[in-house]
Figure 1 (tube, rainbow, N blue to C red):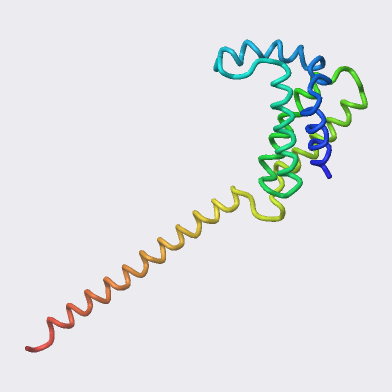
Figure 2: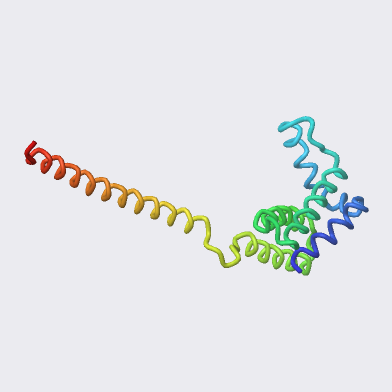
Length: 159
């Protein structure tokens, strides 16, 4: 349900980008010099930038809705929501709606769906590896002692 608003709004903006161009023009005017300095091949036309953001919203929204790459998709949508909120004007309801969406996206970006997080998994993988190494050392010491005792016993045998 969280992704549906991004998919619908993204499709609407892709088909009619002119409706958003005037609202984002102050932002694109500030971003255009940065884009030109970064790489002159990057698009700087406001209509193209609006379409790129709309396409990113649609793709990330579909990924979030289908459960594929949910954490990166939520992060992309949250990052795209910040300039959308900044250029949205002074409409209080729109700003509150965007803040609510941002909160939901941030929760989705950190949600591991009940599975352990990367920190937990790496810590436990290191612990398992250390235990395995200690066990191998113990076994090697034990076998070395047995081999040494066997060598001593073999020297004592007549023959």
